[in-house]
Image (cartoon, rainbow, N blue to C red; front, side, top):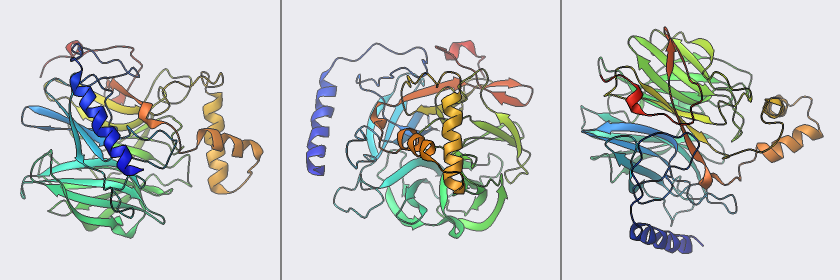
Length: 381
């Protein structure tokens, strides 16, 4: 089966290059199909952006074959490059799927998510950490490369950070001293902020704990760190599978906090789903004075359920998750809701991207819905 998929993928890539290039993009249209310079849908999920030289690199999970009809969870980690943030060249899978080893964390049937890359100035290496949900724990696969585009070599697999089950995470580096950190969801429990070692491929053992919650849907995942001046910010989503929920944002004076919860990141969304999306990362545009872009995944595309618009369905889903994980008050309605909206086997190959500019009330960040927007609206650096 996998060999057939590989041949089909090659045929698709060949036909894509045969097409004429689409018209250049000059605006962001959140939730709408976004095509690369080959005219194909951009396929990165749980994504982040890193700038190297004069180019931007947008990377994440390649979900082009995750249709929900079989066990394919990912097809490697994919990367695109751009000079303007609008028009993206497909660089393919910078970390390809491992086809011949079903036990590898990079096998398409395995649950590998949310790659994050740091550049280590001391070693000259690009270091990539990937979340991996094994049969027992949520662990990490760590890889390094000499170039941003790879090839990447595995340094370690099935790593339990600090001996903990570690869910969604983010990596970030201090611009002051080059020291790097990982923030991660200690599974269904709290947020951990931990110091990386000098190589960025391990942890020193020093960490702090924040935002303890009794479990889903309240536990914070989809962690997205950003910094503005001397203040540190962390956006995050609740834990409701692929069903969207309200994103929150917190602020701290140091990497290790204490972290203050500022409340919802979004404004004006009556459905309480952060505009039907899950936060992935927040990117500071270097050539704009004060522009941060909240990058999110719209996993479901469009939801037509009549209860969705006013938030009724969203509240029902969150309550079903809460009842399920605290193992109280479970009933047939909760089971039916989770079966429909909390399932994993959805067609994420059709997911879309939601990019929205971060606005500020003093030091308080927030996002609002925009059907279309452009970089020209913001002051140059």
